[in-house]
Image 1 (cartoon, rainbow, N blue to C red):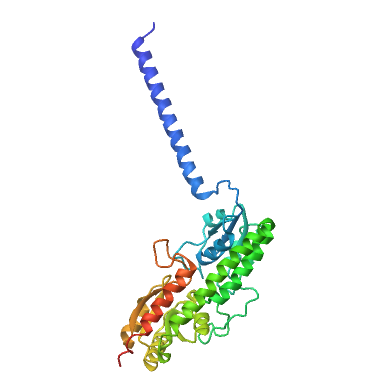
Image 2: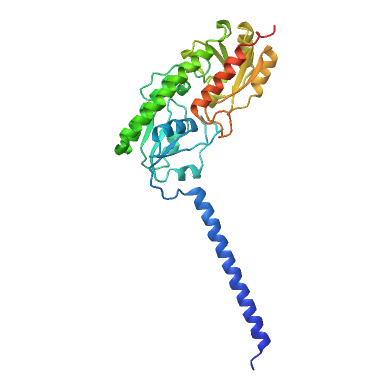
Length: 321
């Protein structure tokens, strides 16, 4: 005998199960879409180029214009020397036409990274540049990799980028060359601006003290001396001996102000400042740009920010005895 009540309950339960199934299916699709959005690159018309860090990405964008899409593997604020790449970084390389690295041993992780990416062309921007060597400490005699801290050497980077872009996109040769010429003119102007600013510091105070020895190229260009806690961030161990030696140099040279970089802790340098009588003058950007709202969203902004801090800090009264 047909039971209307039982049938109604059956239909109700079936519809409820169906509705729940549809709801779950839609959620799976939504979540999958979110993962794909963050993990897989959508189809794009412009060729896609990766760089190892944000500063190289900015240089590359100034050459690429609208013809190429440029992205950095590392994010603003990342420590780039011993960066630990992730599976999502490997996925970023999907469809890349080129990967740009600095070289000179800066990206210690890069060879292993490339072995996981397949056959993607790469270009090393310091190839052909005569490096300055690290003086003293455990890295003595090795090339200092921070060549981009000199606007003049950054122009060499730009030339390398142009050649690499023409290799993957010959039709854009004129545009890349034109963009590079415009950008290099800005770097020429920046070089003069920085020279004028730093030359205003009394000669006896042109002694730059930082956490990392990343300013060798800038110091050489503009007639400054330098000292630091460690040679490169990949070997940023703070030892009592290093601190004592740096404090001694600061006192001997009457350095009024010392600094540190954005991608490392400034705690040790704060202690050095306290013990030496110097002032802690602020944070430099060297291995990474800031975010868009920070003081160094571009390479040119980065150098201007650093030189403003240097000029202000080294122009004050001498260190207290």
